[in-house]
Image (cartoon, rainbow, N blue to C red; front, side, top):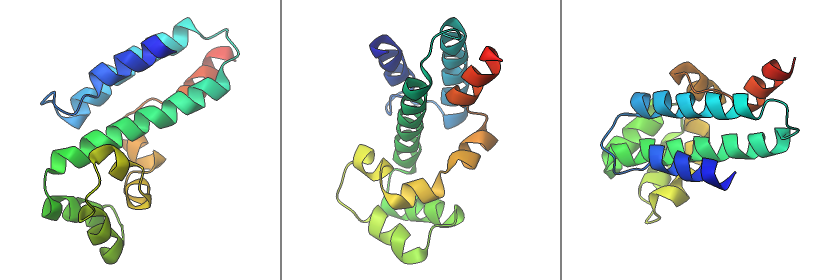
Length: 131
């Protein structure tokens, strides 16, 4: 599990200079192989935790790609976050990782949003492999 997290950290580094779509492509490639290897293991709880952690890493990377306050507010507003909440989040002095756990980030980048980008859901993938 720690080696998997280290690899996910490498793929989702915020200073790599690659787009979110390429990050998701590389992450999908790694995660599908990893889940396939552990398809017979009883690890659904670990997979749910790892899936949520990886989504938070991607939220963090996406928010960092906005770089400044106004583009971050515009992104959050486009995703349906209320105006006041978007500004409070963007003007916060907290770091990118802390902001990625904020309610506004969770409201903007929900599971269907990640599904539309093509991110693999680990728990669902594991369940289909076991069936």
